[in-house]
Image 1: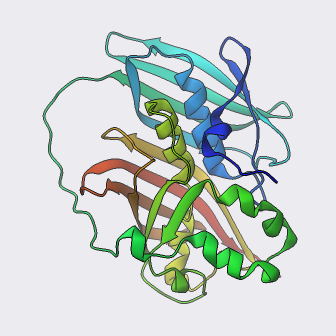
Image 2 (image 1 turned 180 degrees about the vertical axis):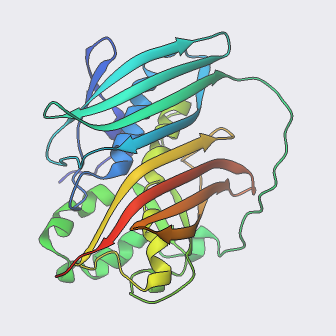
Image 3 (image 1 turned 90 degrees about the horizontal axis):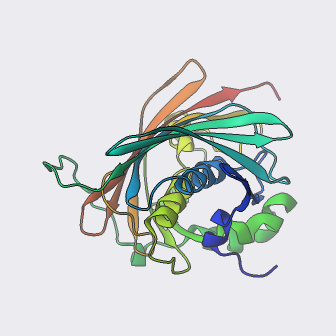
Length: 286
């Protein structure tokens, strides 16, 4: 298989006004990777707003599992275009069924009061952290065939998990995780593309942070885990060509659900974006 480029995931076909089709990547999971619809839905919404408006937040719900073998159609509804803000509602469709909804808000760039009460965690720099893909390549023969076949689709985002050795084991530990991430290929200077790419990457290793206090590995065959909702706020311009630190924490789990929050910092310690997600975490009888 030829090298997969991250930007290609967001090169969607325009069917008609407000209706676009995106191709799917099979990452070897049980269902379509949630990050794909997050990124593609945001990219689709960007096609309908003026060039002077930038996304500042989105809120989304995952309704049905998606099929990674099939494309996804995105239906973008123009909810409002005001003097400063625009709102869009995006529906993701497969086989005539709504599998996902997003509401995204865009704003004209303007100056305002600024403060940051968020400290970047003190972790090893990305240069001192082994890429996650190296672990999978070393253990290629032990992997299930779907994951072996999907490995090339995990390469477009260079993800480096701090203290990764413990992350792959079913050990009890604090519900905190840190990962470095950036695009493996240089992305064009386009904020819509960089935000879509970050939305895609923001779903990596996120919900599984809630499993850590319970000593359950994400590969446990008795585990059923799935995203229910995902929200994201963009605070500063996103640059996926440079390293971003994703600091994740799960403050609570219960009722077969876990919740996680994330903060994304650039290497200057500036808070670039924030995320929240809740998902299903259920153990079933084998």
